[in-house]
Length: 173
Image (cartoon, rainbow, N blue to C red; front, side, top):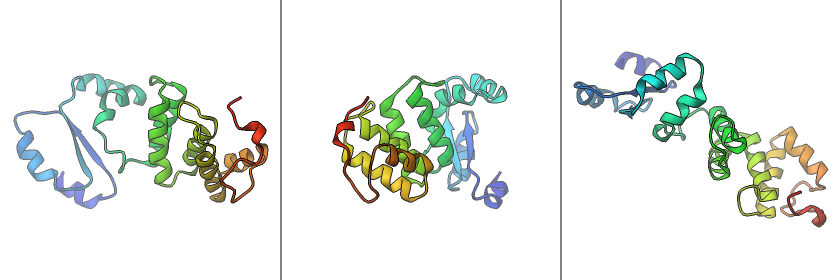
């Protein structure tokens, strides 16, 4: 596995489980930045079953607290945020949707930036902050996010403005 980790530095390998050789294995592999040990999972057989059946969301529910999201694929983080936002496969949580949209946004996902901006703009599950929402939406639009551009047109938001141009639409409808 050492050779594989060295030859594929841009691929992150996750190891779940424990056993009599864990300390020996970890002492060698944890020095690689693309190796992540998830530790002992309460239900490793169930996780494997979910992965084998393509039920990634269910597997995620079990292991999510162990993954380093700063090194994860931003599209996957965006997908997780969206699942939390809509309550698809995961319990609906605006707080967790906001958290993961922010991580994806900070790492360059412009659609996540737009959706986070909408959450602030309308106060969807978080304290409404039209200025913060407008700022995120206009930034996403500047990176050619079509949904952000359309939203700005719909809500009469001027490019470069960090305020709402139409005060009649400042609340969630």
